[in-house]
Each structure stands twice: as C-alpha cells, then as structure tokens.
Image 1: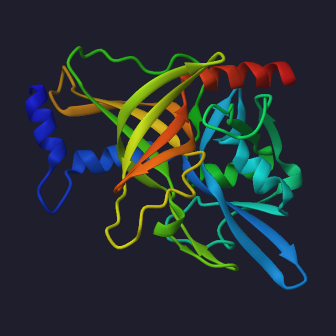
Image 2: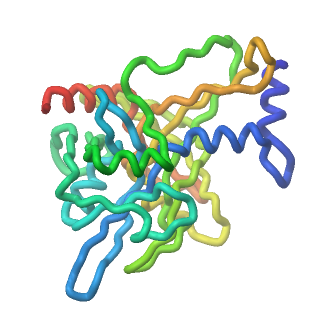
Image 3: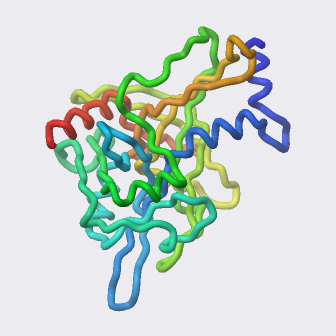
Length: 277
C-alpha cells in the first residue's frame, strides 16, 4: 500500500467518512473535555462555558491542560468545574469538581492576555476524582518522548479538539456540549520570548451559524502521522499532542486563524510545574 492508497482510504465516500478516519477522530478526542464554570447564587446555579482542555498525566499526577485565561477569567471565581466525560450527557449533571480542590500551575504572566501569552496552565485534579474520569476518558501522558514513527512514508494531518460554544446547546442553567475534532491546516510557526507558537487555519463547520470560535480556548492541537503498517500493510497512525489553543488571531470568511502554544511552551510549563512543587 502506498501513500496515494492511504489518502484514498482516508477520504471515504462523498456521504460517509472511512472507518479509519472515524477511528483517528476517536483516538485524538478521547482525552478532550469541554470545561464549564458552575456558580451558585440565591437564584440557583449559573453555567458559563470556560473553554476546552486535554486530560494529561505529568509525573504520575492527573491534570487538565488548557489556556491560563480559561482559569483566571472564568473558573477561579466559580464554585465548581464541570467537564464533559460522556457523550450525550447534560451539564451540570455530568461531572463536577470543587474549584477549591483544583490546584493551578501556570507560567508567570508578563502582562495583558495577548497573542503571545504565555497563556497555558495545568489544573491538577485531586486523586479522588480520577477514577470516575478514567472510566470514560483517557489521560494523555506528557512524560517521555512519545511513540516514534518507523515508516518513512506518511501522511501528516493536524487536528484541533475543542468545543465552539455556538455548536452546542447552552443556557444559563443547563448545557449540552461535547468536544469536536476539526482538521486544520498548519499556517505558520513563531518563536517569541523563549516560547513557540503554531498558527492553524480552522474551517467553520456550520453553514447555518456565523463563525464564532468562542469556547475553543484550551483546545489540544494534535499532529497525526498516517502510514501503511509495514507488516500488515493496513493503515495505522501515531497521534501526538503538539499544542494548546489560546488566541483567535482573525477570521477570514468561514475560516479562523487560531494561535496555539507549541511543544516547547508545554515543556516550559512542565519544568515550571516541577520547580513549583
């Protein structure tokens, strides 16, 4: 099987994606969560979509990796954090954690939130919550170099896993949300003040709703390498987390340009997390 055949399999038909493509989507989205702030008041509860995130493991600890402004501007003033761990379930009855039990670890902020950040954070999940989450979702390990590619010929695909708020059902007291996986185009790379960045071009998936990427902050950026497995000649892939979305640069028609912190920025956050503890 050659790369042309791999691409043909991935395309599927005009009406139905291929089973291999569906499997890739399931793989890269199994660690993605939508994050909602739940605030109590005299009038009941109020929900606010904070952003998106990726469940990760660092040095044996369990975290949500997301954009720092998701925590600073929304979550930290709430009573509880809600995350989506089961498809089709409605918040706030899905899964809630006390904000007071969450330990944040972010890179030091140098000024206002802007296109350079640093805008990335780890939210440590207490151990007594982890078992329930693992029953439905997976934690992606940030320790070690990750899997390596043995095939020299491959197809490279970039994906963003997040939840644009307009594509879900959201009201003040209830929400029906789930993370979506968008194939994106890697548009540019940058380095600034010791951090790396990747800009991606995201196509708006709905023709009925005007482009709005609110809720995508904190989404995981994934690089997927598709290849023909040498021994079986079947399509296989390696998926690696390569970034965290944090800034909407601009909208061009039905496309949005989203800036993500890159692998070097994530590595800087891990070092800061270890030094802080």
